[in-house]
Image 1 (cartoon, rainbow, N blue to C red):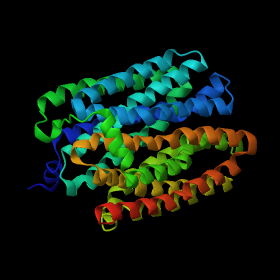
Image 2: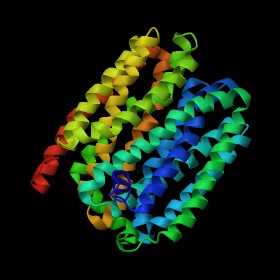
Image 3: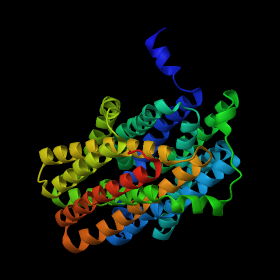
Length: 402
């Protein structure tokens, strides 16, 4: 059999539909959201702390939204939750194009976070539903690669379109999400999801919350990822402000760094994942946290192109190790009938995506960019302690390490 055809047949057609849609939608997303802080600074004349609050509104709402969305997907099926969330994200970006007051950006970005928090755990749970257990690390790595293929092209296209019309990038993003929703509706009808694709649970929301609350391994994993995300969230919040303040052509450098970040993930994710399969996911996450922290520290010392490139290379390698392994760990912790709930609970990690921009914006304004980056790097590094506790907790309950 043709090796390419064999590789394609390894996964359910809906997996490839989700991956293709991820490339297009994330390209559109990265045309707009990484530049939101700059857009608000230039067009709304907002204080850095308020900009941080606006950027952080999305992950703040997503912390609770992911759990609710995951529960709904377990209870009523993946399809309606996926389609509703894509339609909602489309309307949000059309709203961005018409917003003319800071409060609208806060509200719309909060709705964006809610919609995205419904989509993310549901799509990951669906991928697990339709994939053999031994193939899930590969599937999650492909998903992360797809995200970054879109992210590789998005920032440069966004920088170009923003110079013509900033509002046009919001309209284009909303249109792409709408097309994704319509295409997924049609293709889900064509490739009917029977059996595993439409698992439904009758468990109540209260019971599901109680089960998750008692899972100490999950709690420590989420806490560790929150600390990692406090550091990683600076990439799209305060880092562009830091580079604009400290380097000539800082915004242009920032757009190049985002593309380097994405291209590295595209070309390195699968090779690194193949190597990572020889090790335990927790080992990969601890190593990734250490490397990512070094990258954040490097940006604090950066005084030119070269140090910025080295720093983003370290940060990227850290995320390659951490984020797909995080999905694998949640999948291993989750009972099959509660997979959506567990992936939804994993969205509590976005507390870090909220706290990071707010803390970063405050520190940037009060103490300057370098100190801010060094401090958040130290915070991200402390995640190693909680990863270790979570691993021991899993060992005690399951009798095996992760």
